[in-house]
Image 1: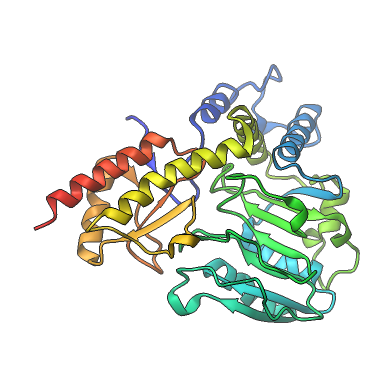
Image 2: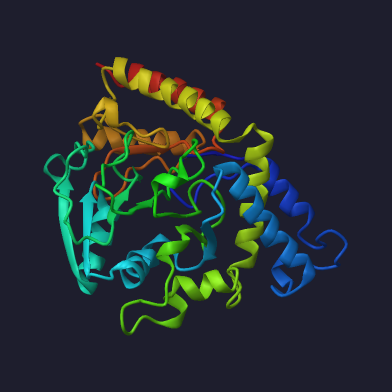
Length: 361
């Protein structure tokens, strides 16, 4: 069976070259006579893998020396608790709620202190990003939190919020390494890797050193203290070793493609093909305000649930898989991460045009 075009939101498509390379090394990693899966995380071979991965990520994102890079477990969802546990010194934080994951992070923060919802786009089913140029940021807020790209709803911040001097904490799970970022604008930038970088099971946290302290909320488990992981170079306990190894390969793949500026250009080209068609189609409609559209996640609908279901079924049979929208919004969603080749998007649009022709009375 040939490979399908996988439009899944995560776990998602990975670069074929990376998968082939990992397959070649599966039984014998570079003369060690064993797989990375079997290797001690304290071994010389593994030390090289994790250090190279960090060095390549630092180079790709131009991460300043006063930021730590942590490879952790528990996914982005565990960070919903870890962030307030470590950062809520005044027990106050401001949240901008632009989708389901930002909402979950906000609800989690409410357990640990006073979380203020200072802006939201829930009034229009999260189909836009609110104006964040002059928000009522709390004077005693420890940080301002956003989810930068909303996987389910297909929105993306094009301008970061004005946090009025407070550290910005951003969940970038679904736009990680899709374009250049200025890390210095964030206190914490983090994401689960299973959308754009690697297999599920790793979350990468890039955190400014002054935010890593002993002063955490009482009762914070040892494993949930940033300082423990930072002091131990992400090796306090057994890390998600194989996942980090794959991430490292993806970093090298992105570097070989020309880095994040080249990725952004490629991603814009891919997204334009799909959005241009959605804008001219009489059957399919995009669901997001144009200026807030994501390059990574493209939700669309026909307006008829039965027709949506028919489209998903026929698309799957034709080799375009995982196009069903999230259960909270319905319709369809094409996730077109870094590793989705441009021909995948072109062929999807061809298929959509044909479907439209066949199903228009």
